Amino acid sequence: MMKLYYATGTCALASHIALEEAGAEYSTVRINFATHEQGSPEYLAINPKGRVPSLVTDRGILTETPAMLAFIAQSFPKAKLAPIDDPFAFAEVQAFNSYLCSTVHTNHAHRPRATRWADDPAAIEAMKKKVPETMTASFELIETKMMKGPWVMGDTYTVCDPYLFTIAGWLAGDSVDIARFPKVKAHRDRMAERPKVQKVLAAEKA
Image (cartoon, rainbow, N blue to C red; front, side, top):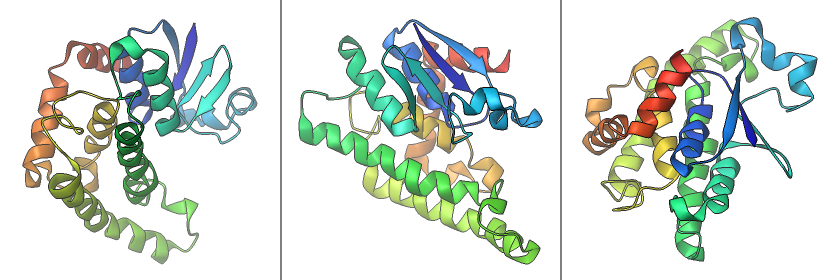
């Protein structure tokens, strides 16, 4: 059985939803960021990066959301969470998820995690003030150029969808009104109606 290490309010939600959608047998372990549990020796033995998510499998431990989402999709082909038999289409899934990971998540992190990049208080505040602008730019690109709709890749639900749902959930905290992006907002509303998504959200709030 796989084991997912996660923290509430993080990108780990995407993998949590994907595991549930895949029908996987898995357990979860919640990491408490408030007590800096991600920096404990016990957790660093699992993920030396000190971040979530981490997924323990029978072949080893995976980190990084795009890799974990690809693994889940490929491990449970009957769930059809990615076009794994079409190299180009699967690469498109990877490209979208990589953009969320490398660019959009990083844009967001400059607000709550600005101390990763600077020590000077003025520089930290400047980075925080920039976040609404960079997040807006990223979501304008997603809205106008990247989403095929009604799901990210078109008519078929994929592992891109829980990932976009997760990161779009951060917009309000980044002082960006999701209503500016009708397609993204409709996607988020559609995701929130899925029973598996509701189950995971309830589990993470418990």
